[in-house]
Image 1 (cartoon, rainbow, N blue to C red):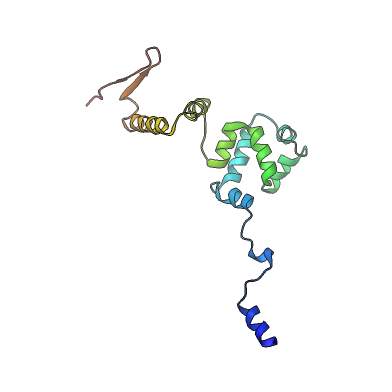
Image 2: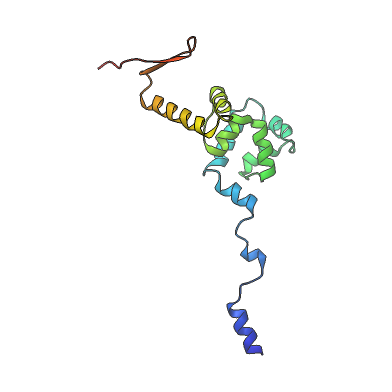
Amino acid sequence: MALHVKAIARYSVQFNTRDNVHDSPAQACYAKSMENGWFDRLKEAIESDPRSPRAISLAARCGPNYVQQMLKEGKEPGSDRLARLLDVLGTSGAMYVLAGIRMSDDDRELLKAITPLSPELRASALRFLTELAASGSGSMQFSADSDQVASKSKPS
């Protein structure tokens, strides 16, 4: 009987969940969805914010010295505190930290305008914007007064 148990134990899967768990869903999302360098971008966003680290900490409902200590010691915030810090830094700051994309107010307005469109209209808008960007900055001009796009010929 002992020999049989050893053979089963040798080839069986360990039940110790601590060794078998790779990532919890929250940690997997937290670790894999953001580009490398997010912590450096978080520090940059905090340092470029006109508020003091103390004011940001208090607005994020953390301890008054949380942001200062986090930056000084290089400790990454947990997901709940990161979410609160990103809320305090605003949409542009959060987008920069998470994706590395700097976003202006105009960019945000463009996203707000595109988001409710149907998938077909979004695809058309993307094609239009891609063609507009590919054609060069001086080849097309938008007239806000007449809501028309006019092509200009490029000088040779």
